[in-house]
Image (cartoon, rainbow, N blue to C red; front, top):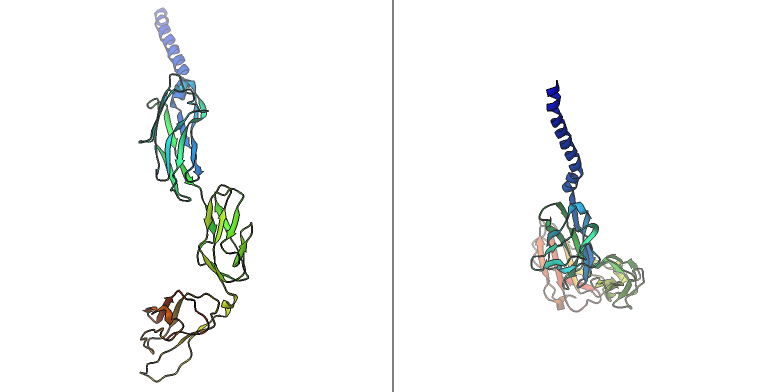
Length: 336
């Protein structure tokens, strides 16, 4: 019995030491196992603008013992480019060894003391390219993120950088409005007040500070908008139609003719005076079982000065289009 107790005591002591060491290492192992999160901030900028974008990091403690790091960024450099770094007011402010390689978009730092804290590790100097267009964007990824050559582990999240812009709607040349009517225009995008609206011809229409356009007479006009930061946009030139356009009619007369006879069937139009008509696009349908189509002529018609029309024939449909530099006036025959 005596010898057994004597032999077990060292083992019990060793067991207590192992348990004690394991318990003492528990917090150390948990710290070593944590993952550091690094991310970039989404942002937007005017074309040609320079800005500072923060590289954000989750809390770094003394036990992480972060002394160095390397980050590689990937982005579309025809829209944005990273030109360097700025450390003032960041966690790396007191770190003397910070390098940024513009050719490879690689950031590297080394410190003689552990980097601690949370928030902005460093700022990236970013420039939006002058030639970039409204609403262009690039997704920026962090393709490599390493601290202390691999320990602790890093989880990196990229961002989207966008060129600021504004956009007027509606905006096409096919805006439909008749003289005397009103139309609401809206502005979307990265708007900073105040917003100013304008038109190219105030004799055709006016627009107020809310974007409400009120037409006065027929003609071509364009709507423009500008915001407080200098962003601008405009519609295509669109036509305010004359109020008499509601009474406009294109007709073909009823006709009776004997079989096998050729006829020149007129396509009439009602009075287009003052409508500024510079083109036509007409479709005529017929039954090819009873009528054979032979062609279209503008000779001796209102559209003769425009030259020969473009004609496309499909099954049972004749499409006639023509245009010119002189507006049509009066009423009469468009084509035969």
